[in-house]
Image (cartoon, rainbow, N blue to C red; front, side):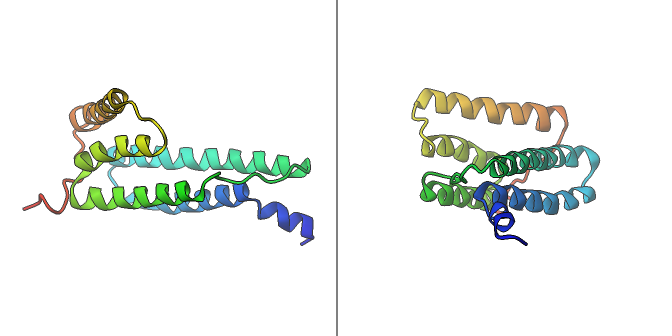
Length: 153
C-alpha cells in the first residue's frame, strides 16, 4: 500500500468513523434477540450511527483526496476521555441504580461538563427528555426499563 494511501486511512476522523461502524454493527446483532418493539429504538439508533459514520468516512476521505490536512478529533483530549468515562458510569448506573435515576443525573451532568450552565435550562432539558422517554416508551409502548440491581427483590 502506498504511503499516501496508508496515511489517508490513519486520519483521526477516518479511524473514528471506522471504529463507530464496527462497534455499532457489533451491538446491532444482539438486537435480533429482542422483541421487535423492544429492538426498535436501539436498532434504529445503531443504524443511524452507522449511516452517519459512513457519511463522516466519505467526507473525510474526500478532504484527504483534495490534500487537506487532517483535523484533530477533539481540541481537548481530557474532554474526550471524560465523555467516555461518563458513558461508562452511565452504563454502570443503569445496571445498579436503574434507567430513570441514572438518566436524571447524567443529562444535566453531561450538559454541565460541556458548558451549558443555566440551572433552569438544565432542569427543563432533564424533565423534557426523561418525560418524553417515559411518555413514549413506558406509558405509550409499555416498555420496562432497567430497574437496577439495588432495587430488585
